[in-house]
Image (cartoon, rainbow, N blue to C red):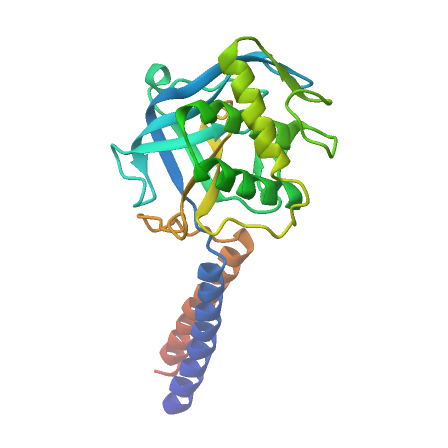
Length: 272
């Protein structure tokens, strides 16, 4: 009898262990990778004063590239103390100065169709356009073109008409002075380079990332980039996030092992 109970107990425990292992595997399979970067400083690079028409938020702003100082990062290619360059995505929020607020943190993800950053939901065409725009900008980058790149990016993300121009349409910019006029002409040149672009276009030189505000959540969304293949290089392993239902099943499997062992132990005691 004792031999039979030993076999039965072993069988029950093995079944429960198999269930627990399967659920645990499911739990780890459903884990998600997450990446964050924190900045402690930022500076405008090649900024031009402009007024935005056709969008909410502050109409008087600066079209510029921004250089951020990295103070913490989940990505080994964005080391602490290094510089991170980015452009603003949305025009409805103000960029928070990390020097005043004691650091700002962003969630980082690769730019894909459906990526979101504070109300901006990237369509297939917009993803292709941003990739092409970055290639055009980087082909002959200079400080005077930084403002033009920002203007063209705003136009892509905010203009509802198929024809893109920062000088006209439902979304457009106004300003004065030689620097502004040069930036506008350069931006419209970038936009003309997007005509006839396929939705499948992707840069072969750069990976583009979307930075969504994490702290503070009211910060401005950003777009950044790195050399091809380096954006998928997190320096810190991700936290594994399990589904609640998966955790419940895992608990059930462990419970089966416990009660199988307890019941068999009680049967041994009654036969002693």
